[in-house]
Length: 158
Image (spheres, rainbow, N blue to C red):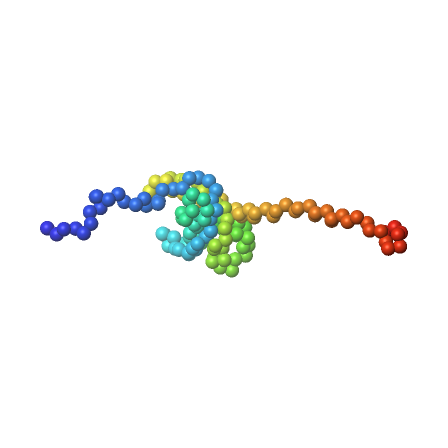
């Protein structure tokens, strides 16, 4: 009998990272966007891979799928509305290509839903990241006062 080079029964496996993140708002950027055919082959969808960029769940990945070509006009309308939300969140209102939406910080609202393999995350909203407020204007410092100097003729300074 041949000896195996590794016995996985003796070592705990790494956490797969597939547990959903808690529901809430997260700062993300789109890191990859791909057009893919639907399973039925009757349409295609835009798959967006988003990465959380801040907080406890930084580097976690979320996906959104937009059915932009589909026999269901309702599915296409919903996908277009979601894409419009993404465009408004990124500030790119007329992208020439999907790559123009990448690497722009925005806020997404994440929920947990029951999927085929248990609980999973779903993005339910997109909004622009609030800009940092400009520092409040400081009042101008008063000009230093200098006492009036008498003129050389002993007259008044004015």
